[in-house]
Length: 93
Image (cartoon, rainbow, N blue to C red; front, top):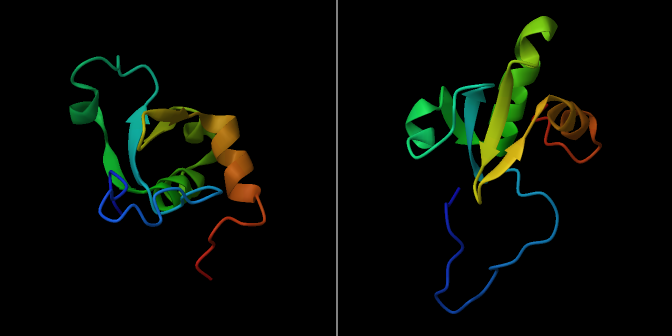
């Protein structure tokens, strides 16, 4: 899991599809974002791990969280559910 693609020899710097192993951070909806956004995260790990974590929560709590993925991409509840239910989500079964 890296925060930045390697520029050394510029190999494998663009991989198509969803990068499930990208670094991601779990946030509470309404935490304010801003300059200290990174310090407000509740948990960090791979993108797939953060999705799994939210989906293990009680259903009525899941909407209270979002995932901030490497590259400043924010994933909110419905998109997280859709990704979890996609056929290429790494279940780790």
